[in-house]
Image (cartoon, rainbow, N blue to C red; front, side, top):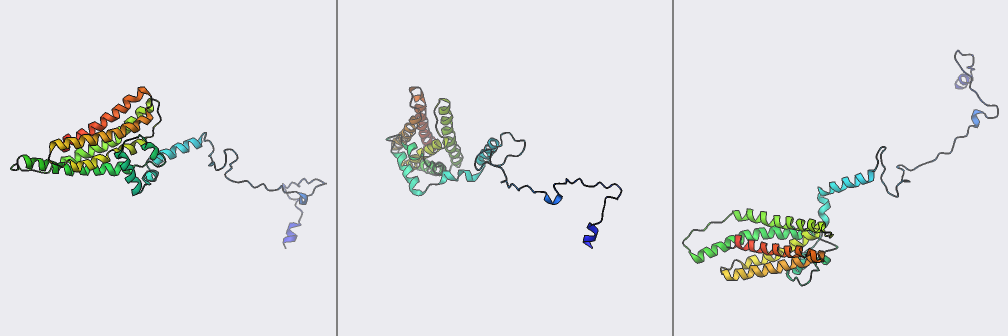
Length: 269
């Protein structure tokens, strides 16, 4: 049945046009061109591994890279590399901040700067000076006049939080932008890391500031301030080698001394 229908002539039908077939080549002799398989998406224009760019995009690679960078700022996973430290590393960096002999702290943390010390030490300092500051005022008040009632000053917590976190975040960022403006090439993560560890000596000295002897308190806070200020200044000096940048080193030293005096006058009066 199928063969009989296909063999019927169709040239006599109305509107039918006979197919033009050359004499030397029959339809059965038509050669199908060899299929040429191509890889999609094509990567012949931009190197190995370059993503496919949609039609109409001029510089899709740069725009996508910028978009990814901005997304990384608000992604928690982007900051995990700055918390890749263990207890031994943190303790060693804290010990380095106690002995400011050479400004080599940036060289030690160059391959693995961390923000763990900044957050942990700043938080510890906030709670320590808030709690021990109240204990110190209690002891001093009982020593001078025990009949006066004493009450816990809750405002120490708010003041310490704003002061310590503000100092640990804003001051390193300000020195970073200042040195960038003056032609140096510092790293803001290195600065945050270094300034965070510079506060560790104030955590230990706060326990000694509870001693109800004013003269001893001043000696303790001045020694702690000088050690912390020397540590900061010597490391900032590595980015300020020129004589015109020495004012930056002096400013970092003075600000660290000012922080020590602030802790003494406000929390251990």
